[in-house]
Length: 303
Ligand code: RIB
Image 1: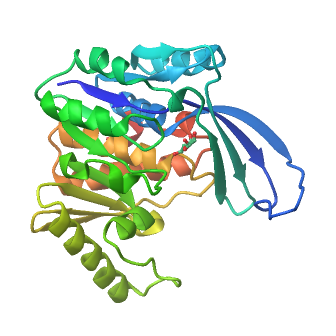
Image 2: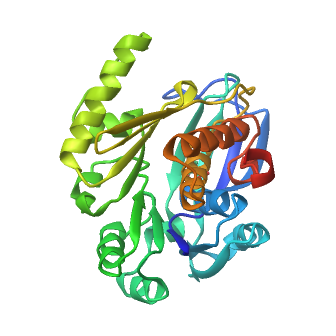
């Protein structure tokens, strides 16, 4: 069984700031680091670090070659990453003193995936393989339709969430990976304006899951909720995973780490409950380190 991640590759520019810049304000950063990122590339790295056979497809410019070197060093096959004349995707990340981040994306190569490229990539995969998608590249709907025709299992992390998501053929998705905001939006619910007490939280999450399972009866839904851990719904089954206590340094890429490790754990026949805990542990380790792709732990630290 092969896993294909068809997604974004970004150069992450991480500005360490006192606070996230406000409208009209100019601030100085105390440090600037260049890192490897992109939700697609991070998820491919997480899968590979977890011990899976992973293929990455996407597009970069000549400035992004270091991303491929890094992915290859983790064992990711990058033969399906195309080159073009323009710039690689970029993420301008502000990381504040409370470890909150805000991200501005420039699509670059992620925004110029062409329909004719999809067929030659997906032609190398078939029945029983898994495709992992996010919402940072163009042609997502076409990729989903072609992947389903070829019998691939579709995992979708609809992030960053925007109005285009509802236009995707979401009924083709086998596993959704969402955060609270994405889950609530797909369930047509408001996100509470204040943190909920445990009982109210569990009612609220039940409502999200009931609505999502009603809407996508054949899909599994995994919702990550920071310190509260991760929650699962599939048919009538519900489960929860717990994070481990680590110092929070940088949450960038934590969701990507979770996604890669959950898929890897399920593929290695761990139960849903075990897989949630494994993925939560991997994400907990990732948040204790700076950066996105490089913060993702290797399997020896997690399993
Ligand atoms: O999920 C984290 C990623 O989002 C970062 O690496 C950045 O590139 C953006 O795509």
